[in-house]
Amino acid sequence: MGNSPLSCGNHLNENSSGGHGICRRKSRFKPNQLGPTMAESKSDTDFLKEFFIPAYIFNDETKFSDVLDAPKFPVLVFINSKSGGQLGGDLLNTYRSVLNEHQIFDVGEEAPDKVLRRVYTRLEKLKQEKDEFATKIHERLRIIVAGGDGTAGWLLGVVCDLKLPHPPPIATIPLGTGNNLPFSFGWGKKNPGTDRNSVLSFLEQVMKAKEMKIDNWHILMRMRAPKEGPCDPIAPLELPHSLHAFGRVSSTDELNMEGYHTFRGGFWNYFSMGMDAQVSYAFHSERKLHPEKFKNQMVNQSTYAKLGCTQGWFAASVFHPSSKNVAQLAKVKIMKKHGQWQDLHIPQSIRSIICLNLPSFSGGLNPWGTPSGRKKNERDLTAPYVDDGLLEVVGFRDAWHGLVLLAPKGHGTRLAQAHRIRFEFHKGAADHTYMRIDGEPWKQPLPKDDDAVVVEISHLGQVNMLATQNCRSKSVNDVSSSTSHHNGEEEEDFSDEDDSRAEPEFRKFGAADTFRIPDEIDISQLS
Image (cartoon, rainbow, N blue to C red; front, top):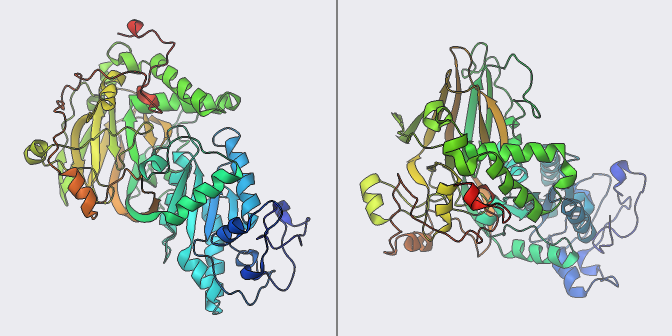
């Protein structure tokens, strides 16, 4: 359980399941009676009380009485111990040492949906018993999730699916390669420190963070189950956690079609299809085969960039056949106004399409930018808000095109903003393509017969995030952000058909892996 003075003392049952000690006393601590340990100052003890959830909240075998004050910021902490090399495991141990280990969970050991169902069932039971302490925990609860974008999206999906009366806001610790979700809300994109001081510093940010709404996007995918064997090294239907969240549609569901499998899920940052997802898939596959080589964020980013070169992303016009361009692979429809579908024109050169909700892609880049007043008037394009019920649809020709994002006010090819988007893949151009949801890629089989694979994206409510003062995401209801978006500053007028004017410095890429060239790569050999 660790050395925290807040952890029910040292009265532990070492033989309890999972190695987690459970206090068997019939009474529990009074927070105002706790004294600091040798290793912990009184101020740290008082600080940690505001996050600490006692064991009885999780287990009815422990009792308590006479608790004066409930914590102001009780947290459940979900950590992917496999993320960030050994960092995930180290972070797990540190959190368990400063808080009650019962409120710290490894998502690799127990799925978040099971944890939250159990915790909220217990809280409801205690509320019915007129337990005021538990009622306050229920009202004030916050969630911390540490992992890559896929792990963070998984937690968001679970909270959304449970339809809780008081859905807890979520803070994200960057522990992946891209870390777009944490970066969008001010939590940074570099892997965190795992020592005690770093954890206390993060908890202080959680205490000061503001709540912010974010759009939730539903994705439905319908296809025939492939008749042939799996595509090495990963089976074609090894889909992201977010697409497994809803499972298959039942046989009685009106969306079900004879002979088809229908999958549902959700995302919060982006859905992408094409070359960028292909590079991500190559990275994902390599890491799955050789996990021992991916224990350092800088090494991961360098490997990602090298794969961008070897996959042909920097020379797509040479190595990537035009028959696999987005316009040849799919017919895309959008709904700008409810009930009115229209065809979306996609330039023939576009090899990657991104449906974006947050202003962070590929480790912190903003593909949409901020449209000028002229673009707003001519094309009805608005600034990107995370709670306006609109997705920004952006296209890229190749990685060189993506480099324009590194220039001031640069952006990709703006295709549309829409409430709903529908992709229809028919027999013809290719037997597969690559797709990605919030950092999790997969290899998607395409039709070989006269049928279609359909992907449809639609708005599905909102969830609560925690954001720091460095938050990059903007709310449509935030007067200050609306003013900053329309303060008279005009963007650099990159053409939506040809964004090749920018000449950024290649060494200022940060974590923008999709568009980053490794130092050892000879650029002259790619042009």
